[in-house]
Length: 286
Ligand SMILES: [Zn+2]
Image 1 (tube, rainbow, N blue to C red):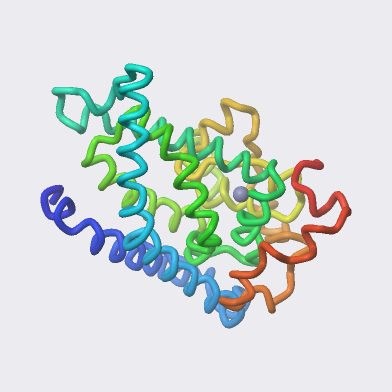
Image 2 (tube, rainbow, N blue to C red):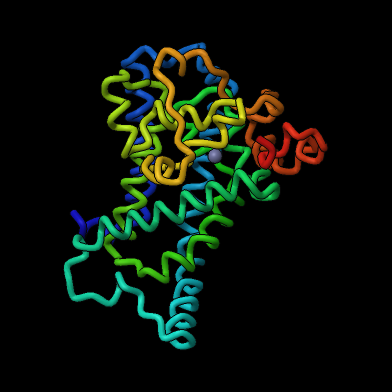
């Protein structure tokens, strides 16, 4: 399996994106959590456009572009600072380093995500993800392409510094793909299961709170795979399932359906709404 993935990374990433998204859309359908109330006619064209664009961007442009950049950073760290990446220079099997690597990767993702909610220029890009007025597995891929590019280059030095075992680099995005489709699904877990699980994993209940329009909730629950960084750094919020159903999803100041078409989503970071001085548009103000 790992050998096959090694030789077919691009195909695996494209197939993983499509299959995981379809799987959790079917899960919503099975749980009677899809249908007209999900506004799929206005949401899905833009979300699916970004899913396709971002997957192609990652597979055919970003990964090839990041390879020489990562190589350059690795040589710089090694030659100038004498740094030896702990997870690369090892004689152990890659599986030994799988958990530590994922923990560091997700910590880097958590920190970048918090910055995306703090820095206005990063928020302009990240807001595209938050303007969806419903959530389902298509929301998982509703990211502005520039955000994907910026985050990849911001994270690269940290990943290179700890080392990127090749099999971790292959398995991590696939696992991530399945889990982001899971935690963006519209199917909520029962409280008895969600409460213990959400101490470790970003469950659909846990991540839904991050998509609420009230900023005290938008600026919480940043973890993408794990929730324990939020618990550790004091950004975790919990609501029981009954209350999750009553809250508005999206951003209160960007709810126009025009923003949901492919072109609208691409140009949305330039929206004048971000230039307004109203504190509501500034993620720094809680
Ligand atoms: Zn966010």
